[in-house]
Length: 255
Ligand code: PEP
Image (cartoon, rainbow, N blue to C red):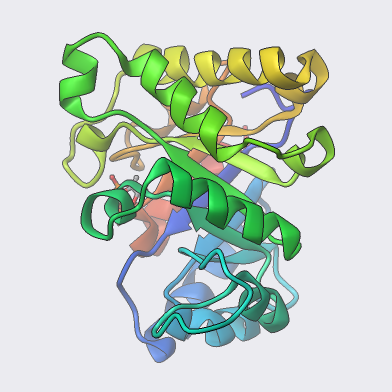
């Protein structure tokens, strides 16, 4: 982290977990534990829990996010949720391009770009997920691949709009597997993303960009990961569902 240059952000990705009632209970449990955080705290919850989460988080330092949004404003897209629907609820953040969406729901770099565009147009802040498969890492193409994913997603995004973007580097082989990238591996790719942003937007934009690590980050390894200079916090899956663990990670990013 380098808090002089950019905010540290810990975001929970609840995935397909928690009913609205359970959402209220978990937010209420997390609230006092993170009240003194010296980093941004976000809970990204299922669509059906957004209203409950917003209500429960009101007046606290917890921001609420969604886990996806569609690229169109409205129309014949049965079962989808537009970015405007989210802003209308008061949602502040949206996760775009999570590897589970890429893996199970046909998400491509092009649709990640389209969703990012729609989210920014609607006034949402975006947590943009990029990351390599194990095979990519073994083939030595991690940096190239992550650069390409980032470049495509941000095509046409202005330097001013970039201020509403957080990039989450999430090696796919580390998500939900209990295998964490080493702190050095995490930092190396987060730094490569920052270097790309410097090439595309200049040093000020790069220095101001929050780049998170995600992939089996937990209460035990958070300290070491966020101590890296280019790791500005984390996107947390499993551990974000346990209030005490999430709070320890927030504490690590509050140092
Ligand atoms: C995630 O869902 O973004 C994630 C990093 O999951 P986990 O922490 O469970 O690996």
